[in-house]
Image 1 (cartoon, helix red, strand yellow):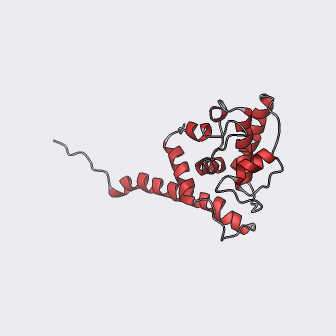
Image 2: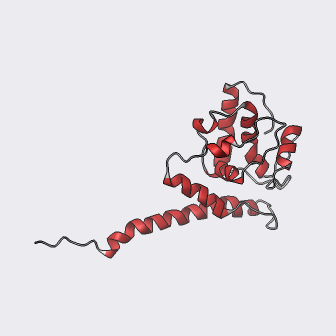
Image 3: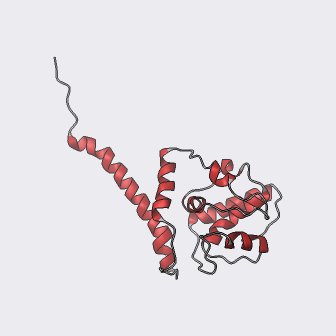
Amino acid sequence: MAEQPQPTPSALSVPIITAIVGGVVTIITVALQFVVAPMLVGGSSSKPQPAVVEAAAVVGASQKSSQPDRAGLFGALPRTPLENASIDRALITLLGVQRLTEADVRDLNCWQLRVLRNASPAFRGHVFQDVALDQLFRAQSWYRPAAKSPLSGHESANISFVKRIELDRSCKAGGV
């Protein structure tokens, strides 16, 4: 009986090394975007920055599945200006590292779209003139008004995407 060739250790190592390098690159990218960049543009290192581990977990979960289950994050948004709801920081992190899809916003009403559109600027320290948005974001533990830092490319793209959806649905404008 002919013996089957055994894979060499280096052949087995390639997929493992590729996965490790991919994970490290993701963590470094998120760290640069959420920790280092805000500090370079005037963010204070004494103020809490978004958790790199949290962002990496969101990115890692999305890499395991092409359609991560995000319904819980979006469904938890307050449905009216009078509803006092907490906005999950995982949603804020997601807005910074992934593009929104039609499926993400399909079931959101106009107020929820408005909150979603303004969540990233709020996280970056935007101060709101709109009373309802101001009250909502000031109630969030992660909100630091006036500690402005620039939006990421994904955040800007998500804001434009939500604005387009709001226009398509004839929603009233407000906020950023």
